[in-house]
Image 1 (cartoon, rainbow, N blue to C red):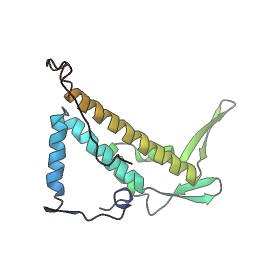
Image 2: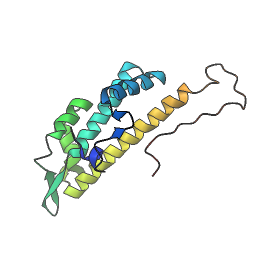
Image 3: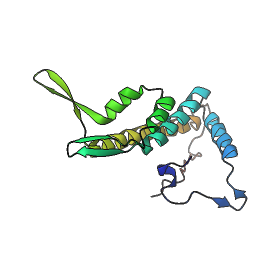
Image 4: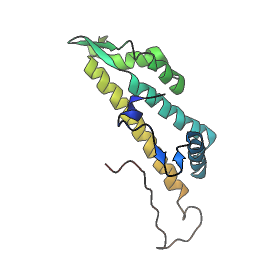
Length: 170
């Protein structure tokens, strides 16, 4: 399936010196890498579900009804089903969270529709926060896996650890 976030650069066909990329093989290698840094099956599943939900949520778009009110674009609303499935969240609650704000005045709370721009901003902030937290968690797992002193090794000053994340150069 093609997602905006994965094909926005226009380079969706990659050929290496060895031929085409083998997604199934690469998936197995990544799963093994997760195990190598100490992730259990539940954590690995949670990583994939988080990423799958993000992929679906990036496809959700909003359009203006008027200057003060937005709504989900009908053509992209089905992607919320994917978010619901992968994140195991209530779709109606997610829709409300992305399209309404609560305003409290004089002790009364009212739901106020967001503009299309505000909904898009909230959606993108949620995606960024989830991705950032997932990345930080993975770095922590890598740090734990490479903590030689905690594993009983006497490293002194003779040990260097390096984490190179391809694609974060820009």
